[in-house]
Length: 196
Image (cartoon, rainbow, N blue to C red):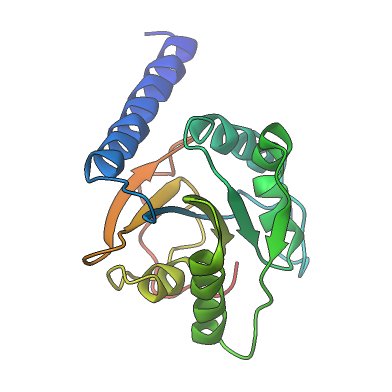
């Protein structure tokens, strides 16, 4: 099988996984007042040493794939951090949907930042919100939204797309999907992550 054919097959599989996740989240009911929150880590960064790097070429491609993956999700609000890599990840979707990104400051701690993001999600007037975070904030944000406690993402993990459904009545639920290029097979094997 040619390399191009394998890449196309992988894209079809990943697109199918995301479509299934979106359908599952939607099938659980999206009554008036319910929110769907799409939580991702920023895309691949260009530097491991720069404290505020831009996206790498692979990251720019992933950002476009995110916009494509969420084009039917009717995103109404986009939340990012003060770091360039989060706003650059959301930029293709913000541009195509004519949305303004809202920066949520870090605060004194990760839990404080996660609580601020959760408050901003709940205050959003729309029913579908994109949140772009970091390897050590994604799990805290999901928990602050009422989802399960998950381990921090490893440095090589970029393909995860978490969908938290916050109903007006009942407990939030979580669907985990992937988008863009797949992470390496061992991407999730790390002892600890820092803000990357």
